[in-house]
Image (tube, rainbow, N blue to C red; front, top):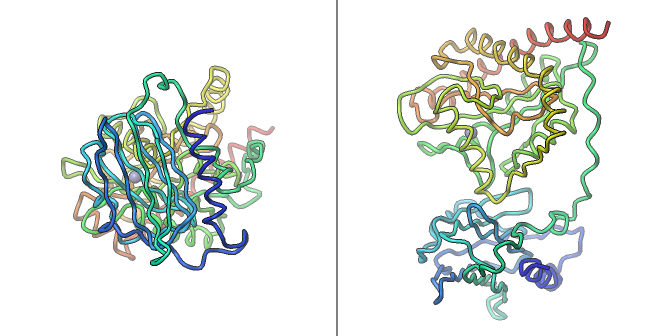
Length: 411
Ligand SMILES: [Zn+2]
């Protein structure tokens, strides 16, 4: 048993005292952090102490992650809205702090550590007079002898009481036009991961709005849309694919509007999956999406063993040309309805969220938040309605060709 799980067990016991409300009863009030009364301090010998002042005690758990080294604290019912964890400073051994929603009812604080550290203690005493709580976490230098001990979150079911995942359903029968096309719409980022931010606009909230509008437009046009998230919560990349598979999606659209550090790039781009990126900027974009998911406290497990890899390649042989046709159709649809696209509107890169082997998938960069023109478009309801209409038209055209091919293949 690792030190981490020991501490976790101690904390689990602590929850019983803290999580006083009956199991089914939601906590009535959200706890709020007070960063002015909170602190990060260096400890002698290379450690760090975190003190976080909260308006009331809440259930929580603490764990560390490696590569890059991070401390993660999950809280039940702590409201971080309007509070920037970046204000938690005071230790050179903590490079950055961020916090936000990770799933409904739960939020997460992540500290990026300058070096691997080990959890020494964690407690959340409550002040009997004020009723406030103070989370105190102490980290010590990582013990080299323990270097091989696995760090990582305890099984998520221990925290959230979720049922174990069902075995995945069989791949969906290919749609031959006899039922509405089930379109999974994936608004990028969310919760603790806001995505790109420019001029007070976040990619996560903008794509959530557009995702909902697109879902409405698709439903009106007779499609069967499903959203991977309908609120401002963090959804790990793998979970987004799992949602699509569980929904037996006919296709998967991930929606983004990233920012580029340099250049004046503007216009929409449609990405398909490839191990070799079209260009350097595309490769960096794909890496950044994986890194955002990683930094939010979730490790992308590399499930691809050799046999699974071969099977997935076989499935992709069938799916990849359908994804390419989907990208071409969306480029045409957006071109017809909103005009200006990026100079090379169909590109490819190794986006993890596009890796479902059996579901045609594309990632649409609706525009660049780093471009003023694109920001104006993306925040215009009229422009967004035209973009949605372009995608609806594209899916109609794609579905017709794809269903005709499916009918041929069944003979
Ligand atoms: Zn993005």
